[in-house]
Image 1 (cartoon, rainbow, N blue to C red):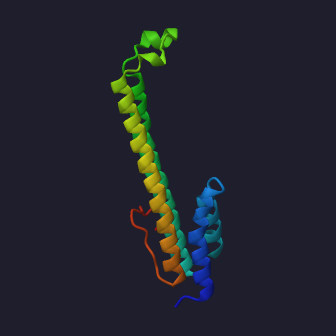
Image 2: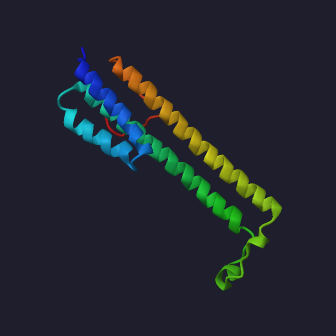
Image 3: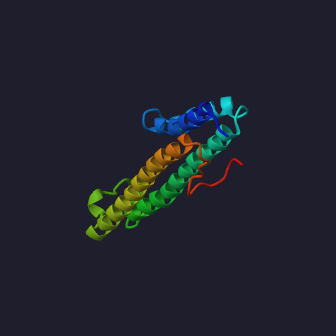
Length: 150
């Protein structure tokens, strides 16, 4: 049986990840702070803290993978028609980009931005949903979450 204090602490822990929209890295700092203070006092808060941190680390990993795929692909699309001699001498000009090359670059950029925005929107709504479930005293496990902390 979870007490209202445990539910409130766990809900605050869930909602603290939304601080990322105001404070850089707040989605890691505040949950770690709350979890480390309260994890020994409540199994419910300990479970919730692990789930929150696992989800945030998973979202970071998915963003890094997206960037690791998108950035080299963009760079290849931009510089595929440029020789090393042009780069060394500095004679590379943006006019060398063809219409077909620009279309590919734009498609990669738009797709990457769309996927990143979709990831952030899904993350936002899952955090709100998890906070509601937690405030009701239910144990919530995020979908798409990798178990870094067990």
